[in-house]
Each structure stands twice: as C-alpha cells, then as structure tokens.
Amino acid sequence: METATAAPAPAPYREGLPPQPPGPPDGEQHFTSSETVRDLVIGMADGLTVPFALAAGLSGAVAANPLIVTAGLAEIAAGCVAMGLGGYLAARTDAQHYQAERKREEQETLDYPDREKWEVAAILHRYGLRGEVLQRATDAIASDRKRWVDFMMRFELELSEPAPGRAAQSAATIGGAYVVGGLIPLSPYILLAETGLALAWSSALTGMALFGFGWLKARATGLPPLRGAAQTLGIGGLAAAVAYLVAKLVGG
Amino acid sequence: METATAAPAPAPYREGLPPQPPGPPDGEQHFTSSETVRDLVIGMADGLTVPFALAAGLSGAVAANPLIVTAGLAEIAAGCVAMGLGGYLAARTDAQHYQAERKREEQETLDYPDREKWEVAAILHRYGLRGEVLQRATDAIASDRKRWVDFMMRFELELSEPAPGRAAQSAATIGGAYVVGGLIPLSPYILLAETGLALAWSSALTGMALFGFGWLKARATGLPPLRGAAQTLGIGGLAAAVAYLVAKLVGG
Image 1 (cartoon, helix red, strand yellow):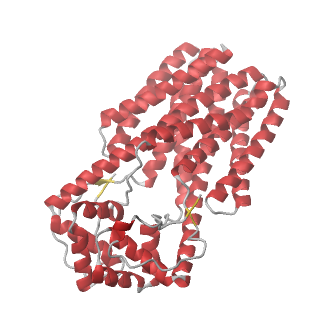
Image 2 (tube, helix red, strand yellow):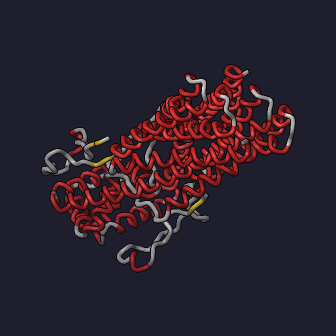
C-alpha cells in the first residue's frame, strides 16, 4: 500500500494557507498499510498456520485422514467465527470508546476551559512554540469547540475516529481470510487417502503459501521481502513442529 | 486501566509554559488500555474460544476423549506458537516500519524543506491557525530538526515510536494467555472419561471464564461490563456451535 500522504484538501479548506511548494517528483512514498490489509494479514497468517500445524500434529498421532479432516474443518470453523466476530467486536469497541472519550473531552472543555486550553499549550510547547506565538496559536485552536476537541482527541489521547461500517467489514475480511488460508493446508488430507503423502503435500503447499504471503506482507510495509517470507515460513514450520511433538507425545 | 493523561512533564521542559490551571478534582478519567492488556485480550479470547469450540466439535463426531485431548493440545501448541511469534513479528515490524519512515521523513526535511514546512503549516491550518501566527508557529516547529520530524511522524503519519523490548514481551503475553485460556476448556476432557460429561463441564467452565473475561475486558475499556460479558460469551458459544455442526456433518 503506497499512499501519497498530505493529499490536497478541498479548496475552501485551504483559505489562508500559502501555495504548496514542490515536493519529491513522484510524491512522498510512505508505506501505511490500510486496515483491510491488516485484517487480511491477521486472518491469513493464523488461517494458514494453525490448521496446518494441527493437521501435521494429528498426522503424527493418528493415521486417519477423515479424522484429521474433521478436526481441521472444525478448527477452521471455530477459528473463522472466533477471529471474525472477535474482529467485529474489537472494531465496535474502538468506535464506542472513541465516542465515549470524545464526549468526556468535550465536557472537559466546558467545565475546565482554562485547564484544557493549557493542555493545548502544553502540547504545542513540546514542539517548540513559545511566548506570544504559543498564546495566540492556543487561542486560535480553542476558538472553535469542534476543532479544539479534534485537537485534543488526536494529540492528547492519540485516538483517530474509526470509519463507519468498519466493524462488519473487518469481521468479513478476517473470517474469510482464515477460511481461505485454512483450506490450503487441509486440501491434501481431503483429496488423498494416505496420511504421510497428504502431510508431505500439505507441507509443500502451505510452505509455498506462507513464503508468498510473507513476501507480499513485507512488500506492503516497505520491508525486505525475502526476510519477511523467511520469517513467516519459519513461524508456520515451528508451530507445526511443536504441534507435531505435542500430539506425538500425548497421543502417539 | 485508568491513566490520568497530561501528567506533568519534568520542570526544565516547561520553561515558558504558564502554570497549570486546576482540572477535574480526581484527575482526568480517560480509559486507555495498555498494550499488555491488549495482548492479554488477544491471546485469552482466542485461547478460550478456539480450543473449546474444537473440542466441542470433535465431541459431536468422535466420542473418544484421548483423541480430543490430542487434537486440543496440538491446537493449543500450534495456536500459542503461531499467535505468540506472530505478535513478536508484528511488533518488530512496527518498530522497523517506524524507523524506516522516520529516516524517510528526516531526508525529506533536508531535500524539500519548504515543502515539509508547508506540510506543518497545512496541519496547523486545519486546527484554525492563520496568518502571522501560522507562519511563526510553523517556523518555531521547523527550527529544530528533531522536533520537526517528531511533529511530522506523529501528526502527518500518525505513527508513535514503539517501546523497545515490546516485541518479546508481546510474544510471551499472547502465547502465554493462549495456553492458559486453552487449558480451561480442555481440562475436563483430560480429567474425565466420558465425552458427554466432559463436554458439559467444558461448556460450563468455559462459559464462566468467557463471561468473567468479557466483563473485565469491558471494564478495562470503560464500556458496560454486562454487555461485554454477554458478547464475549456469545462469540464463544457461536464458534462452538458452528464447529460442532461442521464436525457432525463431516465426521458424524
């Protein structure tokens, strides 16, 4: 996700702002991954890893593909609902939390205006404003209650307003990614009869998927792709190895 | 987590800042849950829900506790490693991302100082600064490169610097919470011989744990506790019901 930040605001908004000087020729290249990418990564990473590791673990303890498929599908269903609905609630909670804090902050500007003005001044002071400029900048911000509260929300509490409809979209993205991710390692156990062969295919398929997924994830955040791919692959392999050992110890 | 925000900064830092006017008698009550609480919630929510749902699902398809325990422990191991290491890498990635963006932003203040100054002005303009005050406030911020870059990181890119050592702590918290959460629903299958009875105990124990956990989670974010408890319980129940149905359909 490459987004050129500081995109031009609508014209009336810019009244009194000097014209924009030229910047880097191809815009500023900052990597800020969108929340959808984040949700995809959450769902896909766990969806690829946990069902793969569970199936691999059970392969060491029980050599019966139908049973492994039953457990694997039950896990995918459970993980999809738990993570999807978990994401839904987390996003809803964020939105409610933002509203509650905003209301509290607004009340504070009514009950303790001097204190809240002072807090604006304290933030600007941290960035080098002093004396008359500090005073006048604080007054300008506090002259409009909405802007004043906006400023406190963002710069004192570091909260940004969640986008509406975020919760449902987040749930669908995480849950869907989990199912898609989980069916990759499980498909060989569904299609093949022999457990050893299914485990080999599952490892190969999941390994490629983890590698490619790690690569793309690293690129999306502007980090070295090869390292990202190796790390993601390593987590999946380690999780599977531990699950295999545990299942072997308990059930083998 | 109740933290009184805008805690007094060390004295030399406040040079040129007017004295602080009185605020609410017991400090400002904002709820900002710490990152550790967030990690605990992530690990515990999935750890309680997914192993419970998997075991419940398998109870519908196979009536053999040793097999359910094997699958459950393999899942807990896989989930602990996948989520713990996933949390580790996510935190490491955040830190690397912050450093990379900071370097890029610093370079921009060297290569395109006018443009970067204009971006500071555009942000302050949004909060109501105009004319001479806007000009002088922008100059004050841009007079010190570290402060200037600090300002852009926080207010243009909305990135805060991750705490050092965060990654390892995050991994341990998420992974540990997953194991603790997962052993609650699984313990009846370990201790009891009959699957139906184990399922009943597992449901009761997990139900209570989800309810209590949802209650505490809601309190930590300042939202209605009863609703939080009911929601968390609902997710666990729904995940288990879907896993049960899937396992019954596939394996029953």
